[in-house]
Amino acid sequence: MIIPITLTADNGICAHQEVEKISFNSIGITEAKIEEFLRTNIGLLFEEEDDETLLIVGQQVINLQNARNDLVALDANGNLVLIEIKRDASDMASRTEAMEFQAIRYAASLATVTTVDDLVERIFARYMKRWPNEFELGDLTPEELGKRIINKFLRENNSDRSFNSSQRIILVSSSFDEQTLSAAAWMNNNGIDISCISLNPIKISEGQGGSIFLSVDKLIPARPVEDFFVGFPDFAVGSEAGLSVAPGSGKTKTSLPRMAKLMEWGIVKSGDKVSIKGFADSEATVRDAKTVDYKGEVMSFNAWGLKVTGWSSVGIYEWAVNSEGRTLAECRAERMQQEATVSTPVG
Image (cartoon, rainbow, N blue to C red; front, top):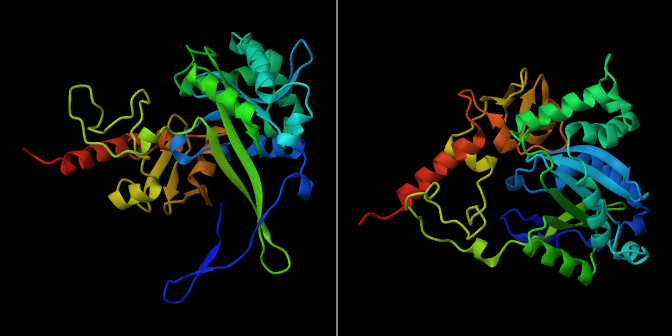
C-alpha cells in the first residue's frame, strides 16, 4: 500500500492525494507492452542489495514444440534465466496450462543450451536481428558479434567455466493465484530457483489528471523471519566480517547499506572518480548518492553501469570501483567489519 502525504510547515503529516487501485487492463496496457517495458528496464524489478546482473539475450523464443516464452536472460553466474510475464490472474486462467508448469517446460528447453555457440545461434542472434538498432554490428555478422558479447559477459563475471550449469525462472504478473504461489514456494524449498514478482499499476490523483506508478513486490522467495532478527557478532574462525549470518542464506540478516550510507561513512564522496571494473573509458565523477557525471551527462549509478557495459541490469556495488581499484562492495564490507568490531563489548 502507498499513502501519499504532504508535510506542514512544522513537519506535521497530512494525507494529500488519493491512491486509486487500477489494473493494466483498465488503462489499456497489454501483456506485450509489459514485456517490452521489462525487456528494456529489467533492472527495475530488483532491489539494490540484490546486486542482480543480467543480459537479455532472447525474446519470444520458440522451442521445437512451438512453445513460446517471453524473455531469456543470462545472469552473472552464467545461467540462463527464463522470464515469463502474465498481465494478471485472469490472463493466467484463460490459458490451458498453469503459468508455473509452462515456465518449467521452457526452462527445460533452455537446459539443452550447452555452449555459447548454441546460445548465440539458437537465441541471441535472432534477438539481435529483431533489434538491429541496439547493436553496433560494423563488419560483423550477428553471430560473430553475439559470441563476442556473450563471451565478454561471462569473462567479466568470472562465469565462463560455469555456463548454463543451472537455470532460473522469474514469473511476473500483477497477481498470482494461490496454486501458482504454492507450487513456486514448494519448488524453491526443493532447490529450484524460481521467483514470483508482482507488478501493479497505481494511480495517485492530482488535479484533473494524476500520476501512474508501478509497484514492485517480490512474493517468492520471501525473506525468512529469521532474516529480520538482529543477532550478535560472531568472531569465530571462518566468520565473515564478524556479522551474524542467517542459517543457510550466506547473507547477513540486515539489509546492506546503500549509497547514502557509504557517503556518510566517507567511502564515496562527491567529486570522487569511479569506474566500472574491467571496462576502459568508463570513469565517472560522483555527484551525490544517486547520480554521477559520465562524459558530461548526469545519470544514476545504475544507468551509468548499464551505459558502460551494455548489459540489461548491473549490480553496481560489485562493479563500481574507486581510484584504488577496490569495488564499493569490498569497501562496504570492510567498514561493516569495523563497525561490528567497535560495537562488540570487551570482556
